[in-house]
Image 1 (tube, rainbow, N blue to C red):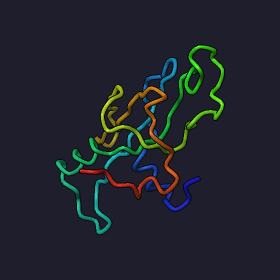
Image 2: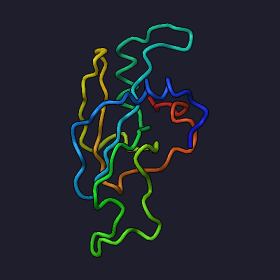
Image 3: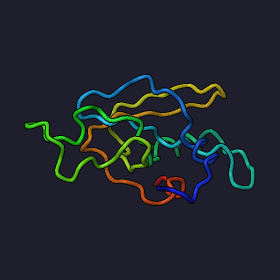
Length: 136
């Protein structure tokens, strides 16, 4: 479990909002980390930099998992190694791919969601999810 990041910082990066969709089959719904609004010293980050970070970020929070995710497609038995991730965990996802959409937040910001196939989840984040930076 991640313990080095404050709950407020995680709530800002992954705001609680209903994605409006439940994944079918072997798909996994994730929320992409929102870009920072300000630097640590309080400088407001321009919209161009925020957009670049938003579209390059590959860290996501698992929101929900379809009923067939992480199962053998022929037998519907769970994979021997079990599920690779569970809702609430942080994962690394592909920069491109998946079905992406945005949900408007009350403060005027947005939350970005993506549905991936279970096989497209790259790995579990085992460190502070806010410490991983987008490759630009």
